[in-house]
Image 1 (tube, one colour):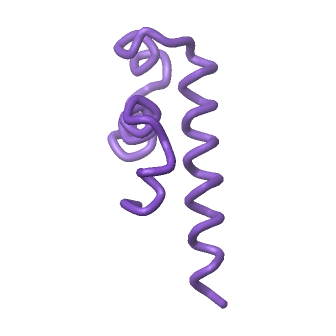
Image 2: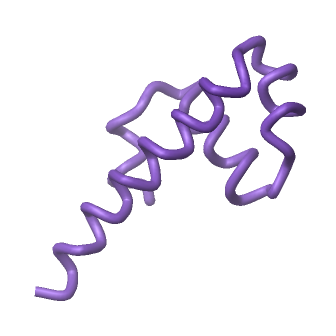
Length: 60
């Protein structure tokens, strides 16, 4: 995760951690960071896609 973390702005990574790792609702995270709910789920999606990409290289 540390490798992928450097590919994203700090706010994107913090949003990802709050939604995916901490399990907080997107609406709550959006309110805290002053972004739209859509922005929260886009951040989550982008980070997850990048993690999948990175992990897919490990099984080769």
